[in-house]
Amino acid sequence: MLLTIVTQVLSLFIWNGFGIGYHGVHNTILLITSLAICSVLLLKDRQQISAFSYSMLHDADTKLPNKQFLLAQMVKKVSQKQHFSVLLFKPHVLSNARSTFGFEQANICINERLSILNTQLQTMNALKLEIQASRSAWLAHVDDSTFGCLVIGELELSHIEQFACLIHGVFEEGLTHEDINLVDSVDIGVAYYPMHGNTAKQILQCAIQAMTEKRLQGERWRMFDSESARLSEQRLSIAAALKIAIDENQLSLHFQPQICLKTGKVVGCEALLRWHHPVFGAVSPDVFIPIAESAGVINQLTEWVVENGIQWQAKFCKLIPDHVISINISAKDLLNKDLPVLLITILNEQKVRAESVMLELTESATLEESKKIKATLDDYRLIGLKLAIDDFGTGYSSLAYLSQLGFDEVKIDKQFVLNLPFSVNDQSICRATCDIAATLGAQVVAEGIEDEQSLAMLQSYGCQFGQGYYFSKPLCADDYLAWISDVQEVEISLDATANLID
Image (cartoon, rainbow, N blue to C red):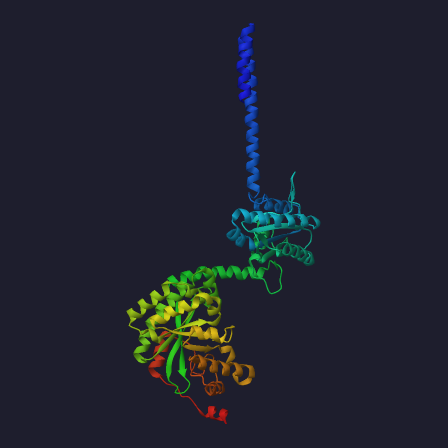
């Protein structure tokens, strides 16, 4: 540009010096200059457009084709009615590498792995997505940590397995920097056109869903499954409805009595959450509690149970002064710093003694949060609350670990009680649990007592308390209040116990 302008100025001096016609020559020079300027501007615009188009279809860090590029190739195959599979994979080691090595170094490491994989895919029937002067690309960068490729042809599971083995093999070595080696799992999901959808976007979405599904033991990859997708959609619907249920008071509490197995007296109850949805009907806690945990509403749910449970406990204690209510909390509730504050507030408002509230924590939850559990449980003890370990025997706690946590109560899971008279293994587990609890200085509550023979066996093992249909089914709050008004003690037969001892 500068050279063109200088040339024009010099030309003006030369032509004027030699007396050549000024206007004709000047107009010619202006025309040439304008054409040169326009050519330069057009060239720059074309370069900018080309660079912009490239950036829109490629990932800046890996230089691989991006999701839009991959979708465009899939649209072509769909329009040609050509069968193909989209295979997506997510190496979890990438996120760990970024936090450990730094973003830039992690990208260098992942690019090395991707380059190796890209080269090895040349020998497979993967679609060559792009041909460049420097290299060809068989891989696409779908999002931050997800990559993918297209497998051309009819679906062959053995062929997909080869791809999965290849991907796992490349990432088994992990990412290494400065003598630090990071290794993690790789999630792989596969969807097939036309079986799983009619459009490119549908197929890609199916592959994403397959990739996010939890793999079974020994599985290297997951194929899209319509039933799993339906259940996933249902879980999302339930999660959304659960938030509304909390706000609109669709939830209710039922209470199952807990009985002293020596005297037959009602000593307390377990609060059981129930949800009856206007459309879904009765939704089991086994269904909505895990969904509440994954959807991030478990704390709100537990707070609702705590608040309403203690309000009812105030009424129960008027009839049975030593009545104890057991309330279940999850592992995620342990990390909720607002829960102890809420408990103190509600206890004071309702004038309920802290020691009349038992918090039940599953054995798996204590293992999951083992590093923080001791300090957290100590906070609840300072309030005066009692603590129980629920579903004992279903986890893998050591006696030393349980001793350190110091539970007030151990609950035998109903799966060991329901078939107690006929299962030697269940008998051994129940007897051992009672012995362990005695060693730890804790009381024992058995769930699922449904017949007199089971009751007698538990009595002989030294189990102090029990609950189950033998005594009463779970009752709604008003019915339970009426029940303990009429029945504060049930008849306990000791004859069967005597026969067992004899």
